[in-house]
Structure formats: C-alpha cells, structure tokens
Length: 342
Image (cartoon, helix red, strand yellow):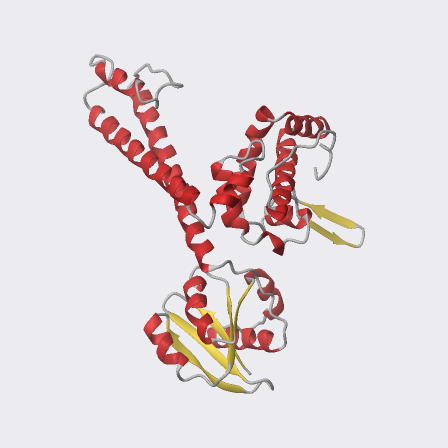
C-alpha cells in the first residue's frame, strides 16, 4: 500500500507519496483541475490511499479521487495542526506530514458527508444568504423612510398591501426616494420567492422528505429547522450520545483545566455554526409553542439569565431531534420527563 498526503490550495496541490516504510516514492505539485488530476492519477503506484486537510476546495477533490483510491480520508484541520506543528513549514513538508499521519494511523479523520447530502446542504446554506440580503433590503427601506421623515407603520411596512398605500401618498413620500423604494421592494419580493422555492424543492426531495416530515412532528421544529438538522448533522449514528451532538451543535462551553485552575467559556467556538444558529433561533420561539419547553425555559431562567435559558431549550430540542432521528418514528410527548437532557 502507498500513502499519499495532499496539501490543497486554490490553484495547486502539493503531494507526497510514501510506501509502508516511510520512504518517499514521489513528491511534487499538480494543478488543482480535474484533467490534471486525471493525468497525475495514471502515474501513481498501485494500490494507494490518500488523505488531505479539510478546506473549501476539499469536497470536489475528495469526490474525484475516491473512485480511484483504496481509501480517501479528510483530516480535521485544528487537530492536524496540533499533531503536525513544526518550526519549518511549507507545502511539501505539510504533504509529507499528512502522508506520515495516514501511514501511521495517526490521522485525525473528520466526517465527510455523502455527495448528495453536501450538494443539498450547499443549497440550504445559499438560502441563508438570500435571507440575509432580504433583511438588509428591508432595513434599507426603513432607513430611507426615516431619513426623509416619512411616517409609517413599522409593523405593517413590509406587508404586501401596505407598501402600495404608502407610495400612493404623494405628499408624504419624496420623489427622490420613490425609485429606490420600488427597486428595494422588487428585490425583496424576488428574494422571498427564490427562498420559498428553495425550501419547497428541498422538502419535496425524496432523499429528505420522510426524515423532514418526522422531525417536524416535534413541537417548535419547523421546515427550516428540520432541513438544517437533516443536512448539517448527516448520518445521526455517528454521534454516540446526546452530549456529543450538543457539543457538535455548539450549545455548550469550552473547559480548560490545569492543576487547580479551571477556565470555562459560555459557548464553544468549535462547532457547526449553521446548525447552532438555527437551533438557537428555534429555541427562542419554542417556549411560546410548547408547555414542556416553556417549563425548561423557566427552570433555567430562575438559575441564570435569558441566554442560558435559551441554550437549555436548544439542548432539549437536540435531545428530541436525536431520539426521533435515531428511532425513525414520529415524536410522542411524555409528560413528567421535562428535566432530561437539559
């Protein structure tokens, strides 16, 4: 078996091929394009296994090499840095160290979701970009009205029927901002339609439809939360416990302990930020829709503050989602067990 370490960049990929004894058989650089990789693959000794660090470019390279390799692995960047840290650092050394970690079975491998899940996850994350742009446009409309002193109903401003009424008042709305308001409104409408189309297409997807339907039987879990959970968490069996899933979602703090000194942070920065954001937003609304989650919130609120209470509700939602996903059945509330997994 030959072991290949790749140091991936936008335009080039540095590689190092080693045999089982650690002897370097090949090393160099190859262009980060599919046709150059195809040519490079033909020069490799057989059989071979490859490893690379997780980057924004890793996905397509992993998919392209996997059919040709005995095994393809992706390393966790933070853990790999801790293992392979050195005073001298360059692309060829990095590739060689990745090859050594792979050869000695020291590679801190991270989970690589199937291609079909990653493609749909990319679509869902693009939906978040649209939502951010929509919010920016709405804030800009409000800013234009406030700059020119136009009185308006803030609660109704972005409703469908109110905006034409506002523009119909020729005396109140200045002619200088009318084209900007119309352009902003058109952009908001277009973004709303696109965002809705993305959500509907993902909900109807045969790969996700049944799983999302089951998750939506949980109180306070809507379509966006269910889709985010399904696509960001991937294969739920990779989490051994609810605590591990909570940690992955970034709903607990870091702890650094040395001798008698302990340092804790409220929220860990090592997390999946996409699922964390969705769960926290869902947890803010959940107590209004479910009495059990409202009780979790109140109990945590008495011990701490509102932010701690929201995190407690989010952790409870993770427990609900884990159970439904693992057992592949609809949610069934059980009274009197609210204190579990807070």
